[in-house]
Image 1 (tube, rainbow, N blue to C red):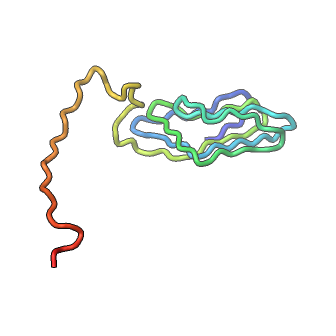
Image 2 (spheres, one colour; image 1 turned 90 degrees about the vertical axis):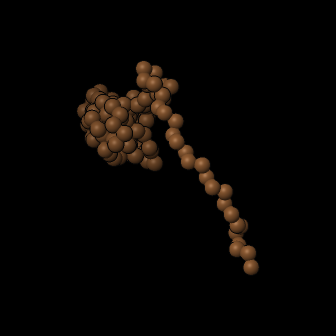
Image 3 (cartoon, rainbow, N blue to C red; image 1 turned 45 degrees about the vertical axis):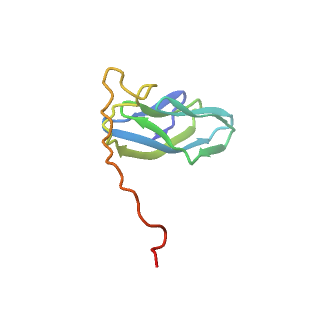
Length: 131
């Protein structure tokens, strides 16, 4: 996703059944003045930087996740600045339509049944067989 207009959010809404992972954000300022650039993913601020004139900045090694219905976006106050967000758009096999609540569970649903764990047989012998 690339954004190039002044004072405009460029966003991409994650479609149902997908999950985005942002790995890199890049900003380039092609003007003679410093400008503010902002990037977010899933409502979380990734970058809020003032980029000096005629320079750029790159943030790599990110692992920011946005779920279905959330967005990733970039914003620039620069009339001639360029920004991009890159990463992956993956199938979300969990089927969630968004992140879970703060308690990490759905209070209206009963908790799942505990898993049945078969008893383990004791291990015989040691690291080396008897001679």
